[in-house]
Image 1 (cartoon, rainbow, N blue to C red):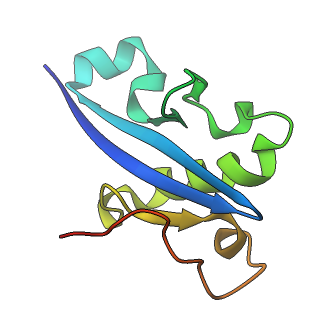
Image 2: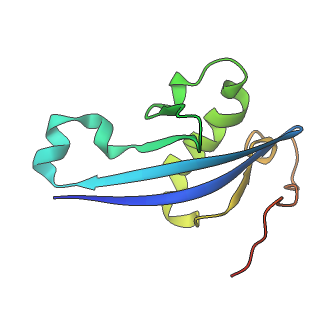
Length: 107
């Protein structure tokens, strides 16, 4: 049996706002043996189809923006809520203050 959990993430960086999707797949032990990729968070852009399982596959400008957010999601999945803003500058340690969301946070 396989279960999916999907979270929408607002990714921020210098002059950057990206709508992203993160998918965590939980599987039975037998299915997990067939593919180690199923134990990871799948993460990518919402809309253009650029999605990776391995955070170290991000290339170009995505290395500095998407990679630290992807790693953070893998390590802190249960702490992150859908719709949350994740600021790559904060995750890289460049600043202590996250920017303000461009989206409404109506809870």
